[in-house]
Image (cartoon, rainbow, N blue to C red):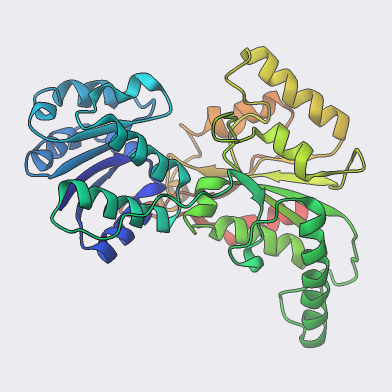
Length: 368
């Protein structure tokens, strides 16, 4: 089966890995890359003419109007699946509606295994392979997940603390014995802290197993004796999916006996804490500000650049397209210290491969 796909950057590595395993020929294009290189639309059209199925995960990027207009003839000849969070995005779909609905479930469930199952599902309908079709694995839209806990998702703070206290004590004991960098014995060994720091991560990043940035900042915080509670979230509430916004996630996982368990937060997503499309922009902003005022703790917002790569950033005078999302918007809620922490790519030739700047991670941990 030949598949042409246009989707979020974070999905591309998972899709390509799954395609190699299943034996599907895939031509995958990331939304951000097309937005910056409109000439790719012609290439997508040419590839689609020879494809068995076309899959679009539509977003708000401006190129979509041009791409969809160009596809009106192709959709009469080829199966097109066009899905997205807005119902109006589904209009280009030419396949059976149930196929589009099932495809969207695989995509929103995310994870490598769900992409593998999606390709098997599509191959069963549009290719020549007939594997057993399995439904998507349902994965929580938020939870506590630590890099050293494998794939375990902790559904409550007490459950996590029950595991973490043992892990943290063992980590420090081993580090203290050998003087390794994996404990407070390295650097500021005289600082013993019982303080917890919340780390808010993107669900997409966590599921893509592309978490070098998150794992590094967590390690650097723990090296200084700080305990961490890493939470992943989709950031946007959805009653049908059961996903919560960041404010709701904070209340669920960072409060104990009606008081914050944490003394600081490192927020690694760019959505507003009170993000909720069901209410006005002013109400969304007030939700986040009111919560943070009641907690009375610092919330750090490092920058993970989506629009530039590490190589270009080093050669530039600073950020441009990231300023509104990564600096201005968080400041409306009172978030602080927008220090560059990493980027979606190491250089301009890379696929989506989130990369950390180690020295900056240590700097941020010191500031916390």
